[in-house]
Length: 327
Image (cartoon, rainbow, N blue to C red):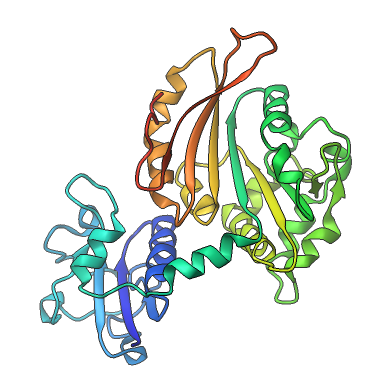
């Protein structure tokens, strides 16, 4: 049963997240944002039997009476079904609530699809707020299991200044810029990622850092997400077990949920010296946790009081909410 869903959302990153999450639940739906895409209110109606409307109540008002710019849209009062707010009164996006309000049963193929997607390997993201040496020490101690695969890839979405000290993974292997430039080509295949990589001291295949100090940020988070989507295709290969570790630093808070939404695990790493930064980041951690389509978000920190600067994990939480996010 084909139908269309119109999501009225002014934030392009939030729309991308909503589209991804709703699309998993309703793969047969034609999803658009008439506000951002400057479409007519009737666009997409020919793609299905009926149309459902979602909207952000904080942006458009509870009665959704504001008409977006561009082509004139029909009055929402003419809709057969009442538009559904994307957030609850507390500002939380709950897909179960949205599905219930839409009155449409999610696709029964959702669970098998997720199992197939994560069966071969996994994608993990590390978001560190620590010194380079502590970050690399953490990776050596905690991501060794990712290298126990047919192929293990490391992507550093960081400034060149924050590049790993490893010569192969760091300054001398600056292929990240070329990889980000190429991954949007229609001729680019997921296996082409390997052409840009060399092996570092841990056994990861990595393109290293960017050529310019800020190339990753100049090229943008959307391109980084496209590259991660290509990695997802690699990870889903049933004939090979492939794992991916992505290190993400320096992005705007609004960009991170879209960037990591399809990852299997996101780890926030904090220093044990000043826990106040964790408290300040609790809102971001909660937002990212809710944005994950199937993964989990956890927080770890470095305990400098222990001999050898041991890493001590804190509590973790699933995508429905983090336990101990403000550790």
